[in-house]
Length: 526
Image 1: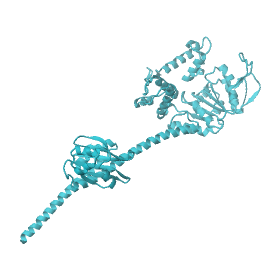
Image 2: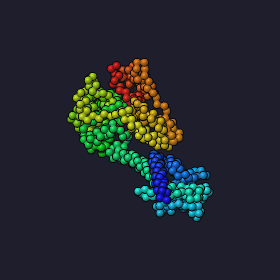
Image 3: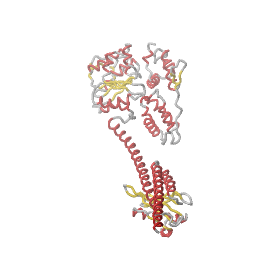
Image 4: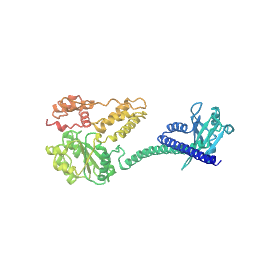
C-alpha cells in the first residue's frame, strides 16, 4: 500500500507536469495568435478591408459559422450591423433592435441561446435564426472614449463556446475596438484635413482681397517672395521697376502696389510704351497744346498729368526712345515737365512704376538706354518669376481660369483629370501665365461636358543646329512678324511698313507685338 501510494504521487506529479506543459503550449499558441490578429487588424485603415480582416482573424482563433459587427449609429440612435460570415453568405443590414443592444448597454459580454434569439423579434435575429445559429456570443467594443458597438460570433452548435473560447474572443474584441477606433480617427483626420484645405483656400482668397492680391493666383515660394516685396514697397512712394518675361503678370503686381499704397484712392494710369508709335509717345505721355503739330486741333492732357496724386505705370519702359528719356528723367528728379508745344511748366506729384521684359543693363551698356534714367527707375526692382519657376502654382491657375471662362461661357466644368494637370505642369509655358490663360480658354471652348477637354500641348523641337524651335501657332506667328520687321527695319506704318506687308492694321500689329513680346526698337537698326 505504501509503495502504491508513492507511485500514485509520482504519477500525479507527472500528470500535473504534462497538464501544465500543455497549458503553457496552449497559452503560447494563444498569445501568438493574438499577436498575429493584432498585426492584421492594425494594418488597415479602410473600414471594408478591416471588416474582412476581422472575419478571418476570429475564425483563426475560435471555429464558428457566423460573425458580425454592430456599430452604434448616433444619427439614427440605433445599431447598424455588418454580417461578415454566415452560412447563407455575406450581407449588410441595419438591425434595430438587436441582441447587441444588451451587451452594448451593459458594457459586458453575453452569450445567447436559440431561445434567447427567438424572443428578440428583429430583422437581425431573424437572419441569424434562418442561418441555423444555435449559440451567439456578443461582446462590447470598448475604447477609452466609450463603447463603439459589439462583436458577435455565432455557431450552429448548442453551447458552442467554452469559457476559454469566450475569454479569447473577449480579448480579440478589445483589439477590434482599437482597430475600429483607429479607422474612425483616421477618417475624422481626413475630413478635418480636407476642411482645413478648403478653409486655407478661402482664407487665402480673403487675404488676397484684403491686401489687393485678389487677381494674383499662386502659393509658390517664388510668388510669395514677390508678394512680400510688394507689401514692403507699397506703403512708400518709391519708384519701382518690375522685371520679368512677357506674360508673367507685371501689370497685376503694379496694380497691387497701387491698391496697397497711400494713393489707392487716386487714379492708376497705364501707358504701354511699345504699343504707341514713337512720334505720338511724347504727346501721350506729356500732352500737347493746340497746334503743337499737324493734326493737333485740340489741347491734350498727357497720362503723366492724369496720374497727378496717383500712380503712373509705364509698361515696356525699355522701348522709350532716347530723345524722350531726358524729359522722363526730369520728371523723376524735379516732378515737373512741359506739354508738347508749350513753355509752361507743370508740376505733378505722381508715383512711377515701370515694367520691362528687356535687359535694361545690357541696353545701358549698348547705349540704347540712359544710365542715369536706369538707376533712377531701379530704386526698388522686383523680379517676376517665370511660370516654369513656379510650377506649383499651375494647378491653382488652371482651376481659376477654368472657372473664369466656364462662367463667362455658361458652362459647368467640374473635373480636370490628373493626367491633364500633370501634362500642363510639365510644359515650360514660354508665354508664361498669359499663354496658360489662352490655352485654358481654348480648352473651355472645346469642352462640351463636365470634364475639361484640352487640345494637345504643342511641343518644342530642336533644329539641326541644336537650338530650340517653338512649333506652336504663336511661335510661328512671332517668327513671321519678326522676319517682316527685319525686312522693313522696324517700320510699322506706311505703305512699305510691316503692317501693310502683313495685311494688318497698324494698331492690330502693335497689339500682337505687345502680346508676343516683340519690341520694334530691336529691329530699327538691323
